Length: 305
Image 1 (cartoon, rainbow, N blue to C red):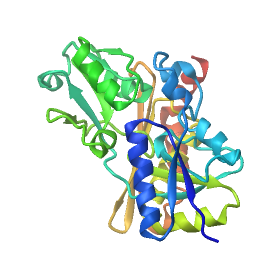
Image 2 (cartoon, rainbow, N blue to C red; image 1 turned 30 degrees about the vertical axis):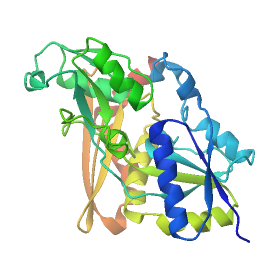
Image 3 (cartoon, helix red, strand yellow; image 1 turned 45 degrees about the vertical axis):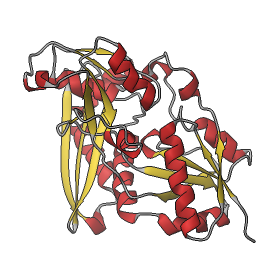
């Protein structure tokens, strides 16, 4: 029996863009869908740094509740916001092809100071992962907190005395807001699943699962699973300075990951290569490898902080 699939989304410009993309994909395959707007805690508290709020899934929990309550049929998330252990009763329905995984710097004016690793500057971000990697590279810089949707954060860069702020490239590029002077941070490893979009539904909702499998991307699903397995094995969340990137290289998968102390002083890295058909356990193996090579010291510091 044909029905209208209710798509749950936050009401930010980026979230609506992502939900509208899924609505279009459903329509291409003969399914009717409508958007249902849900407010999240992450949208209402724009002052407290995310790492101080201390909860996983701050941007997904309200949508999870709406799914379980039957207000919506599917929810569309930036995959990096989705906890590695889903809420009971909620299952992945599709992972869309990945956009850019990169972080970028949006400078207030110019980015000449990036060439001098001993420069003095103030950079804005609410991400402990970005903060830790930035301070590891630029130990003389200061980090200020930056919250809000992408439009709000871009305006804050103009209104404050920062030298720049860090954003996810995909978020700005999707809604055509990437400034011309933005700089790709090729040296910075992204959050696990950054640049990917995940659709989830209620366990047992065969209609929605059948609809969404039409645009599920296996390569992105494999890479993001490896990255999220790495994060989960290190017991990390959105407030932990853990980064991971898996990429398809021909018939192989290359994984790079790191973990840092929040101040950036201590950093441990891992790099692995595996045949694509044997890559499913790669994230767990990478986590075990980094723990055995000094990562446990950082984990102990994070747990005792």
